[in-house]
Length: 290
Image (cartoon, rainbow, N blue to C red):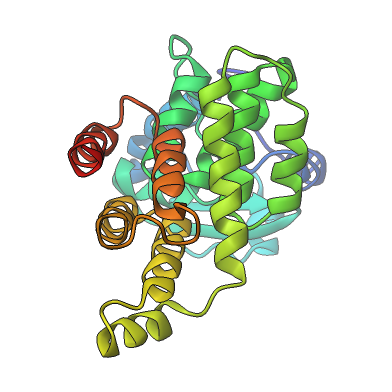
């Protein structure tokens, strides 16, 4: 078996501890146990190679010829071929026996290794798309890689802070935002700061169920109505929050010195001018004002 790339290689009893166990502390290593006489092994091998290539070095693929490496087979109790085992931090963490479709193999790998963005894609755009889909940990990993190369990228720093905030790391998120010195991304920076504000406020407010219970008893409980919108904002339920804020603004625009109006403007900053909800609710707010 020839070595296709630096991250696809044959593992032998002589180098297994180094090439698989030690390497797995740095990057996950997928080990393919195969044999020359095994037809399903031959079918699986190019598929595993293709997947490993897609990870561009973030995943290593080690191939063990079971006819030759009997000691490794005995060490891991391999009973049928093909068997594929994923090693991470020195331990087998997942695997499968028998042929599997590509989608199942990729699903197995997904929690353990991040797929790099295609070379022609802007990693910041990739991270923005992931964030918009609520895939915060993947967005954060993409941004970390980008910031390793350029730690002064203001747009990446702001989005990275928002990922941290979603994980509840509010202090760390604030530190990152404080480090952004560029005037170029004022709206995004204001939006990220608004998000932090809502998350901090929500932490000290009554639970959603309690607030809804209060409103069920008294639909004009302005405090409960306002606090519910903050809880909704902290959970990214933007449409419900905007509806609640607008309703409160129409009913009592002077509540807490015009707080509903100020908060509506903060949400517009958070979502950005191009967001469809902002377009709709700016119009509704304008109609309510005039």
